[in-house]
Length: 400
Image 1: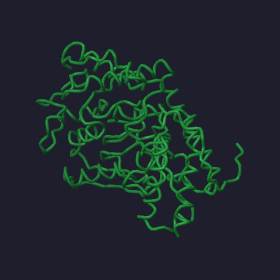
Image 2: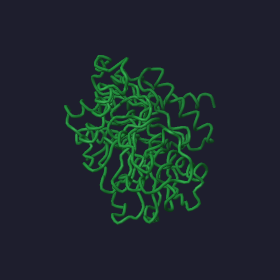
Image 3: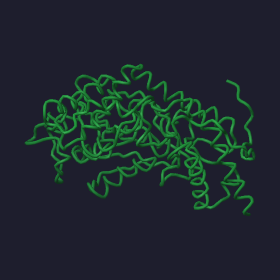
Image 4: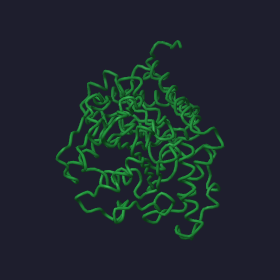
């Protein structure tokens, strides 16, 4: 594919006229599916108990449809758990870790958080946190698969993902515990190499927050039923009772009270997926969005991907760094202020909401490219990004 030479759009002051039809580019909660309206939730079991037949059936339907769409093996268990992806991954760590040594991979804020919890909350002593800076992956060859391994599939705050599952040992002794919240439904997951997988409804299918999903392989179930951690477990983390699995969790009998409105919304996203084109279609939409951004970055001289290696670029949380010499010469606080001004200008124009980089990440921009975002909206955003960059840089030049 041929690209035009990189342009210098910052001095083009004319404001664009065409705006994205949907300005929601947040990395969570994410844009609703195309065509979504509140009418989609008209069949919600409002005012009904989640333990009534209608409530349990809807919760079980979310589980069954998720398993079918994602191609999760039949002998894996899928459950709905409290507190979004954070609750799901913490539940897994508190319930499963401690039987072996633990390796944690950290190349952005969430992986770093899981490593800190292993050290400071669970107080694991046989712990190895393998780190990398934003934009890079850790050295995956350093992972010890005799240990349990905790990692994010896609670094939501860095835009860096593992390219595949080849690095995960088939003959591993420990469990592979994967936080996949901005990967599931947008990337192919090698289920046979994953023992625990977690995500939340608020990401790729554009659902609502506060509810998490937990997938357990037979190996993970065996650990749960043969090992008891030395620390006490809060009720919302308890997956076993008397050494036996609480299997109702994986049939729609949730530990806590879920929002039946959110449940209906999760079902709507899954039904849309099935009617549209399934998992392959979702992945294709996300890859199309990433390709559009790649083409724009290729011809634009003031931005680059934060992910340094192309095949580690996320197709959902697309993170960009500003590389213009004027910007890179600024101090860190000034860089953060300039990047925030770009995001604020676009929000004021109702062009793009919530595209600033994560608070712990290098100053820059983060554009959600998950399956509910239309590629046409991504493309309509680019002239506005160039305009906003020009406004911020020219204003600073005049002030100087």
